[in-house]
Length: 216
Ligand SMILES: *[C@@H]1O[C@H](CO)[C@@H](O)[C@H](O)[C@H]1NC(C)=O
Ligand SMILES: *[C@@H]1O[C@H](CO)[C@@H](O)[C@H](O)[C@H]1NC(C)=O
Ligand SMILES: *[C@@H]1O[C@H](CO)[C@@H](O)[C@H](O)[C@H]1NC(C)=O
Image (tube, rainbow, N blue to C red):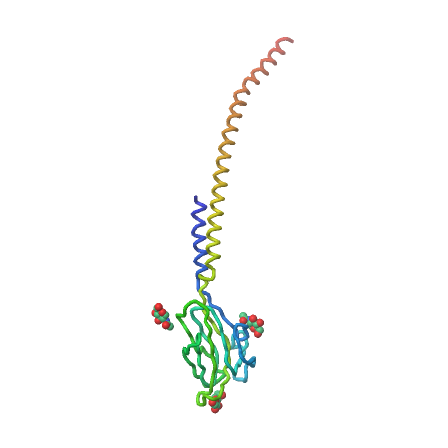
């Protein structure tokens, strides 16, 4: 029973740990980021220091960028000399204007999204001339995903497996205890027999010796 008391909280802790929210960081080179036109890799000027970039790289895109992700929040880290339009699942959700493509900041954040597959799209234009595409230098994207729904079958499997394991363990312990009790009772029975025999044997031996001594 003490064993069960220790393991049930451990099982619950395991479930709670699985239900945690997880942050996923996508580097600009991640295959999850879809560049409709191959981007230029790395910094485009001396003003941009690779040491300040996530994983030391950035990608400069001059066309639509598509990022599918499953999560409840996202933050996009990039630089642009122009204005970027952000769309989520085909709906305009906001824009960001910058003055320097090498000035990489947290340009856009989204929160309170439903924990399902979303598609983020972004494209940039010169702020003063919306007919001209502006390059955007993408460093990294972070999104928050809720692992609960993804791992429910695993959690249920773990709990059912754990309960089954402890049921078997207790059955084995009960059987072992019963077997041990039976064994102890059997052993006690044979000892009682032997101890009651012993004095008789010794007495018989002593008598025999006494008899031998007496005859010589
Ligand atoms: C860092 O960049 C390299 C290549 O640019 C890539 O293979 C690797 O997965 C990146 N690491 C992370 C943590 O994104
Ligand atoms: C930003 O773009 C404008 C044109 O839209 C240009 O005149 C300006 O020099 C650029 N600034 C930087 C820092 O590149
Ligand atoms: C998210 O929702 C919570 C409550 O549901 C609210 O307090 C919070 O302001 C929201 N955050 C944003 C960024 O909309």
